[in-house]
Length: 440
Image 1 (cartoon, helix red, strand yellow):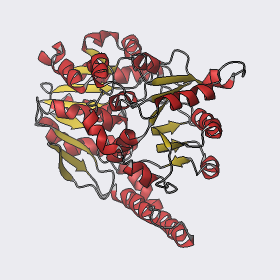
Image 2 (tube, one colour):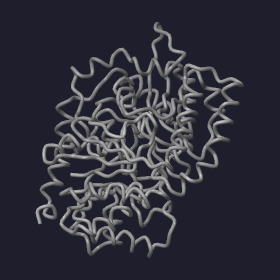
Image 3 (cartoon, rainbow, N blue to C red):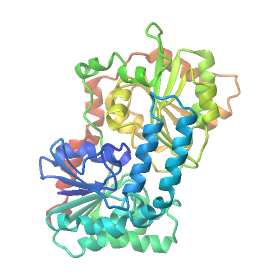
Image 4 (cartoon, rainbow, N blue to C red):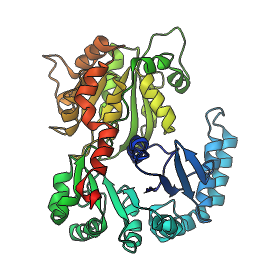
């Protein structure tokens, strides 16, 4: 099997989480090679990770952008003070690499607009030698790149994993008709389309003739549920202590963690920021850690004013995110503002057995359906928060009581196995490999 992605390890995002969960189970059925773009200078072009052969592709057009990012990271690394010298050197790096960056966008594989023109030719020989090719429609360029190549090799089975709507998603700028035609061209060639179960109905409407190929599943699957013995190694909170430069050993703190990305109009940070600002007044021991990035929104003033309890730690490698989730006392999910889009971290959070705080903006949020069977969760609706009339228990007070009542608790292991085993990576892979489309 050849898995084709735009980026992979050490990059940490929803796609890598989806693939990482199922690779150990797919490897029992297939010999796996993974092809992706080389997204940083430090990663090797070839690497064996957990029995998977990773092949990272790089063209000369990519090097300027990767070098630019590398040098900026070095200049702003945590163990150096931000001073005039760093600012001057950063400016010079941007000047030197700025013009070359235009070539990267035009010809390289790292950026989506150049991805299809070169990446497909670089991996065609590996495609032709494969029995099965698997990719995600995130970004869309993955499918656009592979479809014309796989049409040359009709005997190769092609599995598409689609976690987000394409036709109905306004972020993909094109007419509905053109997006339908493009999606249907992929589906025509595909052997099996594994679709996020919350968007399956949307896909049926635009691609009804391919309904027999579409397999609704929750994406991503749930990783292995942590045991009590495994959890013991995270009690020291070594990772969170490193991310929090103000930590003192003798302080009793309550750590609440969000991992992921914020986007304007899709998933915004303000509900989290405002709610926990009020909570901090009631309970100053509560700390919030954000491991991720914020796009199209500047919250630097908020971070600076609340730096004693709100720690924005930028994007971190997968290992750091995983360890931080196991160390934190509470895990925060911020729901999407787009209906039927499910944050990829939900099953990851459940697998930790930690208390979950779910903040959502859309009435009848789909995440609530998955958390309804989880014994340690609190779901808080944004409209209820802004309309608190102070006559009953307020949203902030509900959160405070939940934290006080559940600090140090973990959900029962056997109960989680019983209620969520259908979302496990093992069942996920079994369902895919036993589907009729894969047997034909």
